[in-house]
Structures are given as structure tokens and as C-alpha cells.
Image: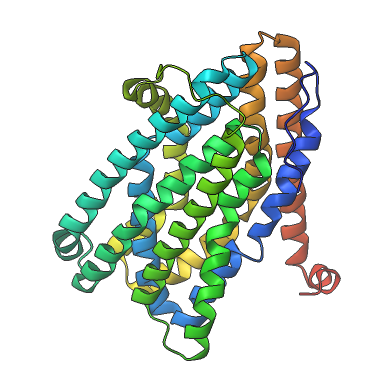
Length: 340
């Protein structure tokens, strides 16, 4: 895992970092998608549908519980380190953490408090009230792990950042769930509690890593990054995150309102598999975001244009290759070649 700080050269190639980032994100295949397959195989279609309705609601509210602050922290730390303002790194991190904790607690209280009326009058599935209350427990640790991952990315520790953000929590979930699955004691409530516990562990690992990589920076900077600063910055990034949330979560929520849990489960599983295409795009953007911020802080327009072109080429190429592979593998000859 390559987590060395990037070269300070103005025209350092983004492709090597993007490839490393993509390589780390390939852990998603056995972990994140293993998580979805484990849920489907152990719960069945009906119970999987109930789980994914709650899972999608939790992810959506978690997004509103951080409002893009994690992305704003990535940009701020990359700019501070590139501009020599190292004294502001720690205050910025603490300020972002405080904002996310406060907003996450509000989101948790809203979901827990309105779980029963939402399950009764919106979802028309009263049995979802208790699962939604348990799902609310995952919002705070999920957002803490996300903002920690944002801080690691801003310090150019992209491999560790994507470990915390992407594959660590589902890997923990799968390992912890296997004994329950083997004993045939795995239920939706168990899945939601394990999800919350997995996020707690991922946030703890991320916090240890972030503290380690923050240790070289001085702790004497003024707290120049106030809550209002991060909220304003985060809202501009949240427009992008809102689009991603709508793509990943809203279809399952909408179908959960209008259809049965069984139909929702079938759709959610197929949709999660289709979203594997985002693996390539996220692998590139995970490296590009702090790089762009650092180049902009140096006013290096030539390096910024070059990095943007490389990022676009890498994302388009990876997505196109996956699309071709997916199409070919569905033909009889392609299934033979792919071993399917």
C-alpha cells in the first residue's frame, strides 16, 4: 500500500496515484460486495428488502448529517499543507469533527424519533420502526469514519483514506457476521447492529491513523476554520454528494414505499451490483481531489490542467473497460471466457 506523501514537483503525474487508489479500492470486491452477497444469501429476498430499505434511509440521513464537511476538510488540509500553513491543520481537523458530530447527532435523533410514524404512514410497513431505530445508531460512527477518511485524503494518505472510507467496515461486518450465519441466527436486527459496530471500529482505526499522521504538524495554530467556514464549504461539495446519494439510496427508498420488501430486495441487490462501475470513478477521484486542491493553492494552472486531463482519461477508460467486460461476459462465449 503506497501512502507516501506526493512529490512536491509541479507536474507530478496523477496516474500513479490514481492506479494506487484504484488498487486499494479493489478490496471493495471481496469486502463491500461480499457484504451485499452475505446479506442476500443469509437473509433471503424478503428480509434483504427490509434491510436495504433501512440501509438506504440511514445512508441518506448520514449524508445530511455531514453536508460535505468531509470533502471540505480534504480540500482544506491539502491547501494548508501545500501553502505552508501547517499550523492550521490540526485546528481545521478538530473544527470539522465538531461540526460533523453535532449534525450527526441531530440526524440520529430525527431518525430515532420519527421511525414509528415514518414506518406507519410513509413506508406503510410498521415492522420497520424498530430496524430504523437501530439503524440510527450507525449514523454517527459512519460520519466520523467518513470525516476521518477525508482528513487522511487531505494529508495525501489516500490508501489509508480509502481503506477507512470504503472497504474496512464491510470487511469487519463480514468477519463478525459469519458465526451468526453459520449458526443460522442472522436477522435484520443483527445486521443493523453489526453495521453500527463495524462503523465504530472503522472510525477507531481511522482516528488512530489520522492522529499518527497529524503528529508532525504543530499544535499551535489559531482556530481559523470555524464551524460556519466548514458548513459553507461543505454545502458546495454536498451538491455532488447529494447526486451520489440519490443514485445509490433513493431508488430503494422509493421502491420500499411503493412495493413489497421482496421486490425491493431484488432491485437493491441488482442495483448494488450495477454500481460497481463507480469503483473506477471513485478510484480516480479519491486521488484527484487533494491533488487538485494543492495545485490550485500553488496557482499551478498548467499542472492543474494536466492532472484534470489525466483524471478524466483514467475514469473514462476504466468505466469503458468494465462496461465492455460486463457486456461480453453476458454472452455465452463471454461467460465461458470469464469462467461464469
